[in-house]
Length: 388
Image 1 (cartoon, helix red, strand yellow):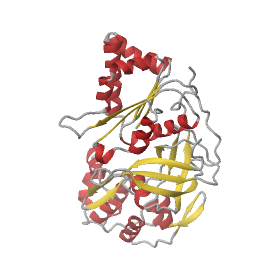
Image 2 (image 1 turned 90 degrees about the vertical axis):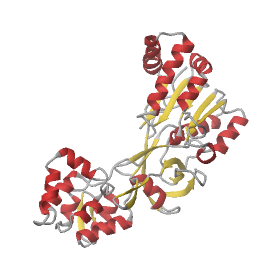
Image 3 (image 1 turned 180 degrees about the horizontal axis):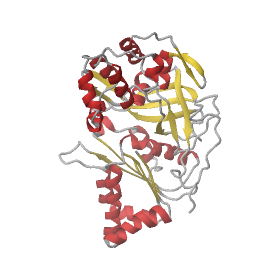
Image 4 (image 1 turned 120 degrees about the vertical axis):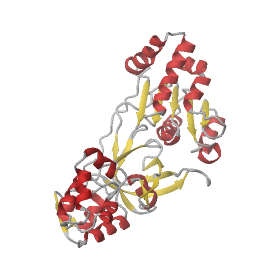
């Protein structure tokens, strides 16, 4: 069994020189009644020369919403057309804010600069006490953006250049690609969870997810992108069995894996574990996976919908329930992949694997840990993660 290295392709666009792509589809994956907002986003890369493999990521530079930018400029009482110099020439203050900064959360540098510029009596003392204590400052900026702070402490005078100097520069957000480049060479599919929340009497959204959901209209060429190849998270090149665990948006790379294997006629067995809150509302790509299972291409499909019964059931529970078969697949040489939440899910899945190795492999706890963490992960490199 050889691990398919899928060498990174030489792409003409990069993090420092992204391609401005067009959104061609923005479709809600959850059914009406769900507590979630998960989108199937298709990014059109025709004419870019960009290429990608199943398992790669798409880097996206989000842009700030027009109403956010305009409100900040209003609060600062600055001219939006003032030119801001950069390494690539100059652009207006408004365009610099919209395209080159992160306005979702206020920076410490900005809050400290604001305190220095506040006139006496304009909350200068109270803000000074906050910035004098690192813990208090961390707590203060945790859920405040620039509009919150400027509204709470008005009266400070910034030049456009001074303000830009206090704002964090835009950084890309990496999304696991949900399509196979061999099947969709001119489009990139993404599975995006839209983050929305209320804070300080205002509705807010995640920087990149909100941009893709609300501010990158279908048909608009508004999305700067580049391909970020993965060094390890690829399919085996042969017909080796694979086991995939991807609850929620963690399903993305496994949709790509299945497309890739189906496209090249791979005969290897495929086992997918998927989970979310409810089957009725949150079964992402249900039609596709059901059809693949009925056709025999998807050998096994185990589902875990946490809120469909009195006690919560997760993907790690399904692994334990199917421990004997799971262990058999590993002994047949199956590659094991997990994608999604690193803080809880991936750790719980990891422990479930150790439990299966102990129970069905007849190993001591120490030997079970050694098998999963050393033999499977580091020696044979058949335990691969894409967690965040």
